[in-house]
Length: 424
Image 1 (cartoon, rainbow, N blue to C red):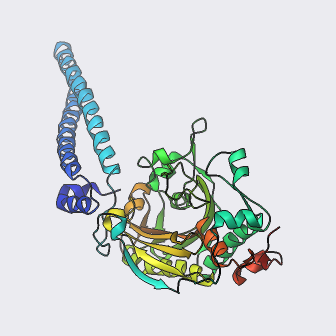
Image 2 (image 1 turned 180 degrees about the horizontal axis):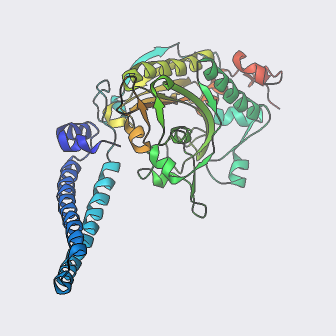
Image 3 (image 1 turned 135 degrees about the vertical axis):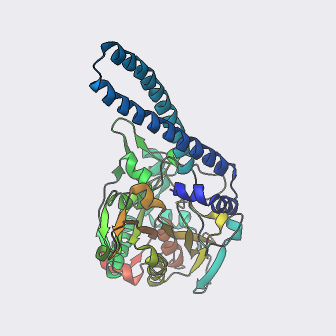
């Protein structure tokens, strides 16, 4: 969430940011007007309350009953006016808060300006696009032929966009998750196992509510929400906390299933398991001092790169332009891996510097050394990596001409001796 002081003192900065995101800037004027109303009402109501308190003290000292009663009647009118102003103030504050909550983060100076994903910038490509000496099968053919992926059973027990992994397929997914968590621990992250359901205020703190309410699964009876990403509970871990300076930075990693009510566009990402309402993901998350956030972003990006590299996948880094930037992010790099069966690049990680945007919502601060004034921390998040697209890339890149799939060496310790997945 943005600081209201930024809207109040530098509205041109917010307007420019919205323009870069291809958004209407009229909301800035609406917020400025509401802020003026709020401050005016606040002065008026506080003045009346001070007057009421002063007169109340006078009434307590008055000897003349008639004069005292007259003052009491006069104050009843003031009390009614105070109630009216308090109601108006509350309405204005709620309207202002709703507008502020809908404003995305300010794109950072490193974020290129662009209209949409077509203007994202490919920073680098690592590895060569593999040229197989046979026709590569897409995972939606390869998986069923191996007997490790069943779409019909997923539809049978739940519905469209769900599937069942069996045998070596289920084990391969579990191996990927376990290996990635262990890798991130070696990179300096502390593993967290968090709830898969959270309260609404936790989603608000991470920037998911109210903006993305329509994409979330909600248990209305218990008022709990299924997590759309481990970023949410990892933000919630330190809501309302104050770090001492020496406690930063904090590096966390966590696995969660993720649940999203995404509307699937016809003809795009509908084949196979590229996009669904439930998927697994390993998350990286960092709390740090503001002056360290760029360095921590570079670390997280390098850690995500290492994950792709150790899997032996060809990958590229794409920097998102302002028009494609996520709601919370100041700067974002996507990691995409090549899938020869699909014949396309698949995003497996999105690494973002959020600045103090989430910390302001979550009220997460730290005490700088030798300073008494508290400051907001910076937070960063990144997939390390996300399923099922990592699974797709492994299956399609390691497939053999006979329809089998070689298990990458780094995953074999979790595969119980399986080195090659063969057709059943």
